[in-house]
Length: 259
Image (cartoon, rainbow, N blue to C red; front, side):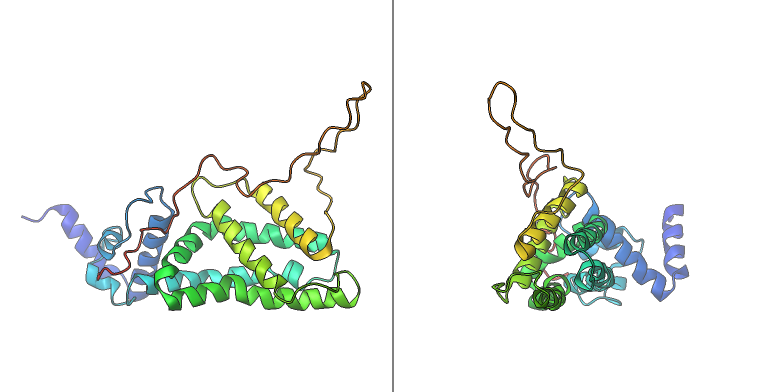
């Protein structure tokens, strides 16, 4: 005789509308990627077991697992592009605009860094997914950065010898650094990540170090003539990390496995 839990599961399947079912699958995928169980591969069977829906329901909405990741990326793209306006489209103090943009980017990666890291890892086996990820996180931003740099160069705020590929290189570095610090467990201190990005961008584009009230002042020479103490080190890429972590997306999605 069927158990009560089986009747409840069947009832849930019947009550769900198509949009609700699709959202449930996306929610389950987000939870699965964000869980600490990074050694467990994501398969259609494991994913659908979290939803109460049958395995066949997955293919009513997605061709395969990379297609699901493309859908997740599409939902994040709007947030990524919106974060750039404070600095890329700004006309205020360049270093302050840079800091605000870094803060908003870090906020996005705090919310979605684990998903973006999983997408980037899976993209190694899917050229279309790789192209979409590159456009969303690097190429789309690089054009906006180049436009801002051209405006700054015209008024003398940016050195005239900037290489044309500098904006793209900086965006590629930014995405990699954000995934390394906020797209893995354990995650870095977001305040350190913001300061590091602000420092790197300000030095690379404007040749100056921005003021940082969060950093303690440099110590002066002591009366015993021991000399000035060395300034605090610039935060390294792994500041705030506890230990090296396994990539979130590595091994999560089998490359040649038919679901």
